[in-house]
Image 1 (cartoon, rainbow, N blue to C red):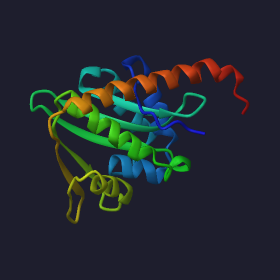
Image 2 (cartoon, one colour; image 1 turned 30 degrees about the vertical axis):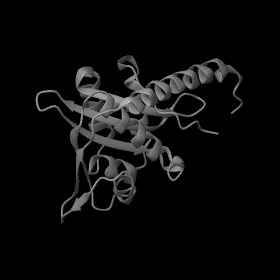
Image 3 (tube, rainbow, N blue to C red; image 1 turned 90 degrees about the vertical axis):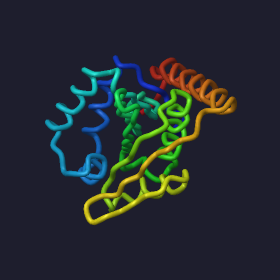
Image 4 (cartoon, helix red, strand yellow; image 1 turned 90 degrees about the horizontal axis):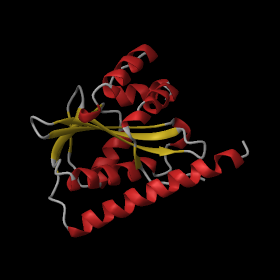
Length: 187
């Protein structure tokens, strides 16, 4: 059973993102990047993320072996005070609410950290992300080339701050519980 508590990854864990992205099937890679990409492209991309931790925030959901099975990537543009969001879920874990859990946590984190403007760009065929955007009240505009979502979030209120503290704490507790139990997991 997978716990749906997205945890913010620390910069020293960003290598796990590379492993996650290379484990995506070809269609999921195409939906994540908007084009067909090689593992070499992913390696170069992940190196750029790892080398600029102030410009990237990653949230992940892990399996009981602490492998990332779903990731939300927040690219930060500090000069424009803008964000761009991207999501990926391993094929065998799609349709289980992981993307929704990541979406909720990322939007909440953005509000608490005053990252209120941004975008999501995806292929018109990416029905999962378009569905999530609509579910969370974000309008999706599709043309012949891509689908675009302009993000404009409200300021965080007291409840948002409390939820962020609670969700962050729950995710860390779940992570440590999995670390402690890992030697006892039977494959």
